Length: 295
Image 1 (cartoon, rainbow, N blue to C red):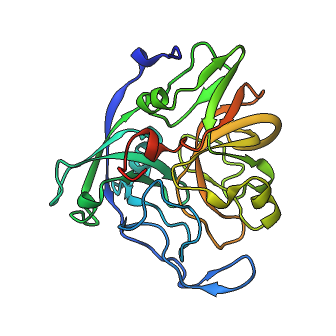
Image 2 (tube, rainbow, N blue to C red):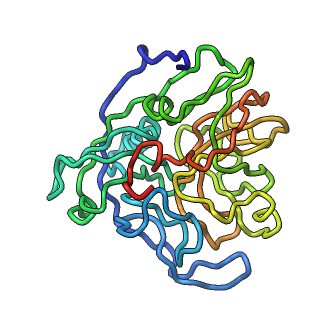
């Protein structure tokens, strides 16, 4: 077991409601100049969950399972409640339906999507059928401030301690062996690069260079995969830095828009390369958290 500051972490409640799908512009213009009309963010996605492919769908930025946001707003706070909902929710946190026909049902937070500022939650197919946009979702937020006491140079973000436990990174001297499904070069990372914090949101793996996709075996990328981004430092934001390694979870589908692709929410980062990625095709949160019987 890695030594952490678990006993010092605060567990608190944050709440949102299931968002309706939104379309800002009817046509999405692809990176090759082709106008397309595609499903996008928001709502309840009945036939797409973590563990499914992140590629090949007639879709753009589709979020698996349930998309949730806090709509509370006033003159003084602005979007502060939704910012707290996004920042404090962690991947692996328990989410409980607090209203509607599925009240009392339990799910798991699977990621955070920037720009639209949604928290994504996985529920069983049976529960999805009972949900409606507007239903309240309570998240037992736990994990913000988590530290690896023996590896102070490795920063941890957005992860429930329970997920860290089943993920089970292994000490190896001054480095930490971290199971991932894929390596991703920082050169193909797009939207989200340059953000000044990684406690909310995501950034995107671009799939427009077929040679790089083939070289790194990204054709089988799945939602929920834990991936290592090489030469990416997320210690205080998202920057390119040779030798750095950052690890995150794939949270939404591929996109046709320039600069976009499957999104990654950051879970761990080392600016001096103390993270040593270890390829393991089972390093997917659907498998680690036993979210589906078929995976």
